[in-house]
Image (cartoon, rainbow, N blue to C red; front, side, top):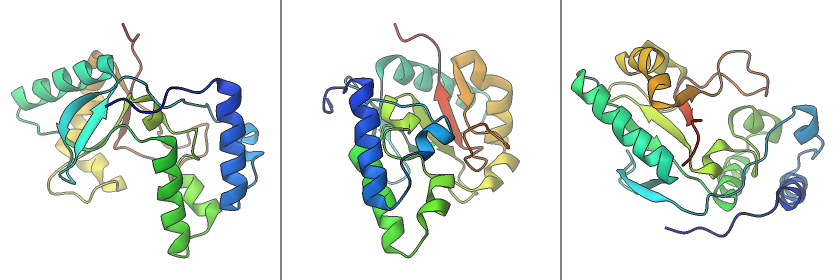
Amino acid sequence: MTPTPATPRRSIRRQAEETLRELGADPALLRRRRLPLFADARNLLCVGLGTDGRDKFLAPAAARAWTAMREAAAADGVELLLISAFRSFDFQAALIRGKLAKGRLIEEILTVNAPPGCSEHHSGRAVDIGARDTAALEEDFERTPQFDWLQRHANRHGFHLSYPRGNRYGYLYEPWHWCFRKSQN
């Protein structure tokens, strides 16, 4: 899969600000919350099906690391379910529009979902991980053997918990969201 080529950082900021205005949010929140910007990944590899039955994609280095981490967990008897991986800028905007259409407030949405242009998922390095007997994308994930395993082993594979409690970006705690941060060779 080859998404649209990455846009220069300034253009990403401009596009993010314009989209926030369209969504009814103050574009100044990008600077206020010091949110990093991420271009859509250019080169992605399929890493298998997600829990929704659709193919999921990651940047090559993250894909290799995810596969190795998932296999290591399985060898320890822990199944890591892939809920989400790469999401484009446009998909992120559509996700937020869908929540707005259901009557949710933009301020509330942006504590859970990154504004378009600010999601680590755009980079192709972020994964949302789940467990069979736990609702997806819920704080209860922190009580699973999967989370315990990730806390002890994910760093060895280059993955880090992006949004712990009280994170500097103002997002709610997301024990399921892990991002590959090792050098991408």
